Length: 112
Image (cartoon, rainbow, N blue to C red; front, side, top):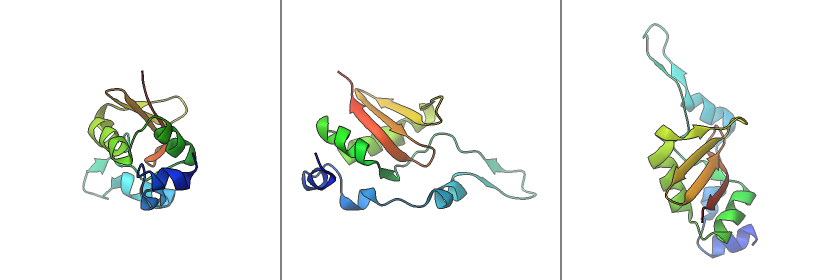
């Protein structure tokens, strides 16, 4: 299924494919204030910043919507598992989502 068909089917909006630059995301993901003693260390991203074409195709194949992916990422980011390649694996029910450190969805599928 082409990305145009995925969007036409309502599985993703065209705007969902727009992504902030990795540098901008990284700048907001970890912050440190000098002298404050406060440091926020980023773990798994809790927001979706975009979708790869592969992810969009896999989502369409398994009838997974962007809203479902965003729900999985948002509600399970505190227990996402970091993979050896640096990506994050989120699981909720039968839906599995893989994101990179910037919250970009690499792939997603529905377990049987």
